[in-house]
Length: 72
Image (cartoon, rainbow, N blue to C red; front, side, top):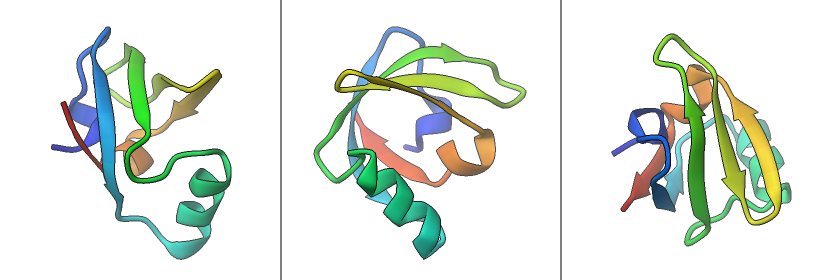
């Protein structure tokens, strides 16, 4: 499943990033790599979602979150 389908309050594990190389590297530099736990704090179906990864909160648009493969 992709992160944009995540349910608020649930935690997922990153499996893969399917993004352009520059965006992938940016997220990896922030700590989003395979095996990272990601919690969904807010998910507006129309677009932006807020996630927590380790001690960092990130806002991601649907264009990015729909290309992040996760598992429960």
